[in-house]
Length: 118
Image 1 (cartoon, rainbow, N blue to C red):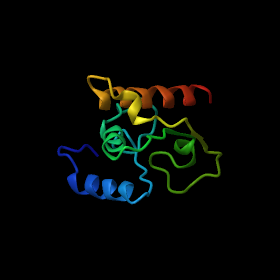
Image 2: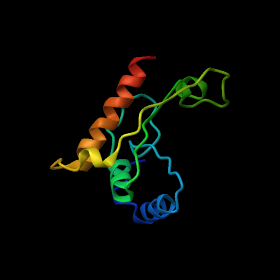
Image 3: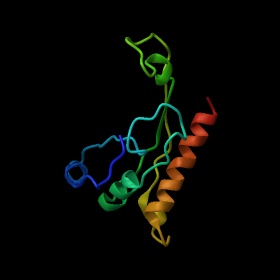
Image 4: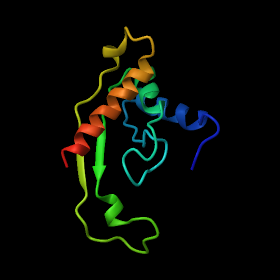
């Protein structure tokens, strides 16, 4: 699914959850992808983290495409690997001309490194 507009409602809800001390999980590509690199990461996750002043925690998931791939009718019992990377601290990007872009790039680099280790 490709978005043509900024999802203001969900962003407001996510900011409220973060302000209340909660956690928000999302696919930084904007949608679930079947293969790493299929979609470039979008800036929303970094924007939320910067705006709320909370760390962005990259999480790499691999194997879910084998457990229930495109067109599958049922879930296969296949190991799925999840790697939680070191958090990215928003304040580390204070001096950047485009802190959201720099943070998004760091997120992508950490996910890429985690998936290459698989």
